[in-house]
Image (spheres, rainbow, N blue to C red):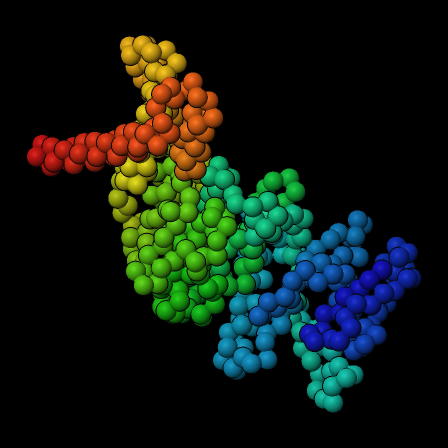
Length: 459
């Protein structure tokens, strides 16, 4: 069996012990020590780290087995490993955060099925490494929690590509009740991002890593400055007071990165101080407007609770709810959310490109059928039916973007290679007529939109 040394900067942390492959020996052996640095490997005489899962600025996580359980249950050991360049003040804050994570997990892990349980929290003191010329003992901090076997949403994005709107709605439906649960207990996560949401193998989502958590009831007026760049709202980065809505802000950023496959910093325009993501993807208006509200720079203008987001997303009859909790403070009044239409909306550029497509394709259809039938009435009726179908397909977004180029290109190719489809008209004349029809369509839709706006303002 391989056992991983947890001493930071150990040169060869992997240790292999053949005798531990025997379960009886594994359960009864007194202790094992790292061959390289002499660090005790069986933590608290119970937990054997077998694999490094990840390492960050303040700690490392190991997959471990608990030899005191009949099934040798797998668990996660998180070790406090601050970087060496921290100031004394920052180091003390980091220690408090690590201990606070254990406190929070003990408080809520057993109460909610989508938050990992805490199994243990302990400190061990060991002699310094054999490779260091220091006789001062070293102290290490550990917490042991439930192991969730699955993939983080960050790993899922890398493996499977951009998320669909439906998958994002499912994430909101599962994670918002978890956020409401912790917020009702005066807890703010403060580090929501794709790598901190895990999908277990059975599909259930879990909220991970409460290392940056803030307990509102015991909090000082200012933040500790622990956050992930690109996911934190202005008030969190400015180290001012934080609110539950910062988790909603970070969740919205998380969803945009999953939908677009882009890093969060590439979706934010620092010059205009605005999120610019709508050109990357097309969402239903209701969801798009809700994400925009979650991302507003002023905390007072965002949704004030996860339950408010749920109520805006889903009708009250089907909206997932959390068990009623006694209010910790008077609720902020929320503006009534207008019911958005489910019909797709179009930007001005989509309208103009659609008009150009309809005019160009309509001209090609009319030329082809007139060349074949020589009957104006039949040609007109067939062209109107086909063109109406194409326009309907555009309104339903069955045809969009590159379809508007591919279909006319195919039609023009057919006319070019089949002389009967163009009659006596030359290909240059056909292109001129089609382009002219496209321009007329663009002018017509522009005039219609201007007249409509004028009449709307007068009435």
